[in-house]
Amino acid sequence: MQNTPHHIVCIEDEEDIQEIIAFNLERAGYQVSLAADGVEGLALVKASQPDLILLDVMLPRLNGMQVCQKLRADEATQDIPIIMLSARSEEMDIVKGLTGGADDYITKPFSQAELIARIKVALRRKPKSIALTVKQVSLDPEDFTCKVDGKPIKLTSTEFKLLMALMQKPGRAFSREQLIQAALGDQTDVVDRNVDVHIRAIRKALGSDNEIIETVRGVGYRCYNGDR
Image (cartoon, rainbow, N blue to C red):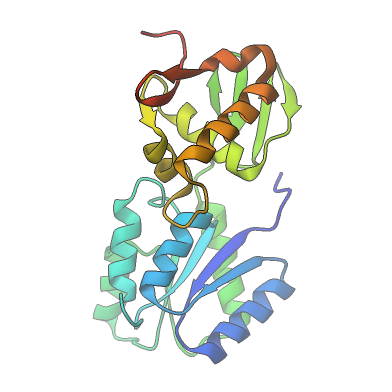
């Protein structure tokens, strides 16, 4: 069950269109974040990992096609549904958008009812996140829950993302910098020296199962699943 509103990032440089989309989507129960150019939008998506992206084609600094290609090339964002928005309605433009990685393409002007309907369809198509399990620790990226021996434990958003990054690559040793990048991306205030604090908090929350997070001397941390 979806316990929190779906998060949608809208990358659109026209302020009036931004405002209309945000107003209608929030009224429909979605959480909306806005970006006004391709570079800002790319950073926002990587940092927030939204459920869906609305992407204008004609953007400053980095156009929509370029943003789409970069998102599809990144393992962390390649499965996020993308709906392209464009005033270009020619068949070749639509084909270019869809073959370039977009899940849907809407030509401007469009009704808000149509936009919401297409968003619902795209979200239904989104593949379910696969729960991660290492020993007695299970983590579900879909609803942001972590359980030990079937019992929920509390983690902050940063702690959850750090643990998820480790559990996604069991056995791989991460430096602190690599762990920050894998879990949180570039847009974060977390620095190398703070990783140790978060890891201590995660270990404390995991209790007797905290041995799944192993310190690798001179490197950083890894998720230990019993294999050497």
